[in-house]
Amino acid sequence: MNERIVEEALKRVKMVAGVDDVLIEQVVLGLGYTGVRLSTGHIGLCYTFQPEIAQSAQHCQVSDLAGTLVGTSAIKLAEKAQSWDLRESVVGFATLNALSQSVIEQNLQNYVISNGDVIDSISLHKTDVTVLVGYIVPMVPYIRSKVKELYILERTASRREEGIFPDTACDQILPKADVVLITGTAIVNGTIDHLLELTTHAREVAVIGASAGIIPEVLFNRGVTIMGGIKITDAVKVMQIVSEGGGTPALKSAMQFVSIKPNKHSIME
Image (tube, rainbow, N blue to C red; front, side, top):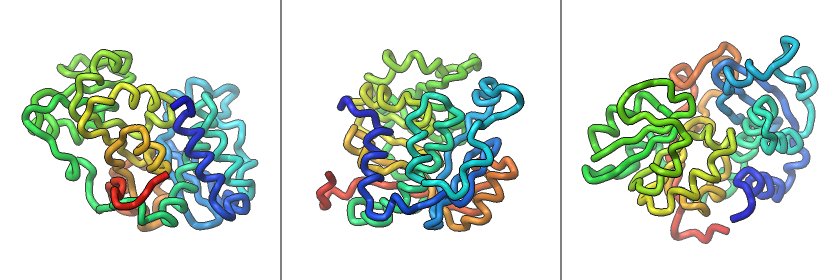
């Protein structure tokens, strides 16, 4: 496919009736996550990439959009997800994820959704070569205990631990994987398209994390077998946690993990 994942997701969202009338109610650029609340009540989250954004910020201003977003068009802000400037794309993806929640709700027949951590929905075998793209620390001991070999690809691979490689090793490592788990931040930093091109031989491909809130079809159509995201149970609490610098551990009190698979009995276009 020549079209980028973010481009297809935006196209699908724009086809939803009434999307042009959806406005931004609140934007919080937190240290851990960026949160966007829409006039529909839907919330989208995106990892903030705080160190990278701080390095690119000039004149003590992180976002050039500050003070201008509330009351503006949600779909226009979601278009910022296409930007290669992380300061813009983070806010854009949080908005796109919020809009995607509405699309998912309107098309529940297309999915099989279950509560719980995505790792519990993936069959891991003692013969599997498994690749984790993004060093999700809590998952590592469990995965290592279940598979033959675990490779971890990490953009900031300054660690010298066994099995951890820089993400530039993806072309060599991913094609031999049986199971691949990719953090949702790969969608935001623009690497997801290439990563999925390298996973065509994998039995299971999962995209996981709070940032993985995009319309599932755009990933399923590229070989992803399961998405591990979140369902927000307390919108007010989530935005408070984000504004106070909270990460995933703090967010657990206001959301639950969910796994989404394609419903093979439903025609997905």
